[in-house]
Amino acid sequence: MAPLGDGVAPAAAAAPGLVVSFGEMLIDFVPDVAGVSLAESGGFVKAPGGAPANVACAVSKLGGSSAFVGKFGDDEFGHMLVEILKQNGVNAEGCLFDQHARTALAFVTLKSNGEREFMFYRNPSADMLLTEAELNLDLINSARVFHYGSISLITEPCRSAHVAAMRAAKAGGILCSYDPNVRIPLWPSEQAARDGIMSIWKEADFIKLSDEEVAFLTQGDPNDEANVLSLWFEGLKLLIVTDGERGCRYFTKDFKGSVPGYAVKTVDTTGAGDAFVGSFLVNVAKDDSIFYNEEKLREVLQFCNACGAICTTKKGAIPALPTTADAMEVISKGSN
Image (cartoon, rainbow, N blue to C red):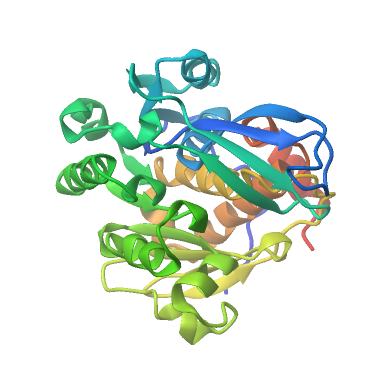
């Protein structure tokens, strides 16, 4: 393994390439008290959510350039969410409003350890109704990185729009970034989730998974390297497995290793993976040699681990996203 860098922030001031994030943005209703069920909760805090939108905001907050492509209900929540994107410096030219469907909602149970359970209201929600004809392909084709999850694969017409956007990006030589963000309750069955998530697996250049998602997709031990590598394919540039506060593992064609994480007082894990991905993409959009240079990659992943850790110290995702200065402060204190 190459040594870690000297703590210099990887995200430099140079103008970065555009990261376009595709998929869903919704309202998370988070209990105002952790460790109680939805039924027992006396009140909820309204927070913007949706993994692809969180990533777009994370990129922007770290000084990168980002845009979001997705559909919202033409309702107060939908307009509020697009306004939040703009307030966070995200290009919203790819955002559309649907007059016939509502913005998606999710009620999030916070367990006492900060982990979450979800209950979704989207029958169907506006994000599911984005069509291929509505895609802003000019915006997508101007990207350096095209990032997406798997929730947009669950139903038509959004699935076809997702595949068309991804194929356009691929054809244009744009790096494709995939964070499945498994949400089993939204799929018809566990096997449908596995099949749907894997249906576009080999289109990606970069894939990030949590250890729990490795266990779900492989139905095996996420700590078994052979099991993780069953998800590898020829043409993939980087596979990352996040292991919570233990840090992350990385796998490329030429090298592999792990980078330790940071112990913090966890309040809410919502958005931690998105902060990690956003901090990675803001760097890869500037310099994709990190796929091939282990020393650079480890320095960036140290930064990503710090960003993910910081995000768990506050409730909600977007309000908890860190700045570069926040991350450097955590790095200066040292890892686990």
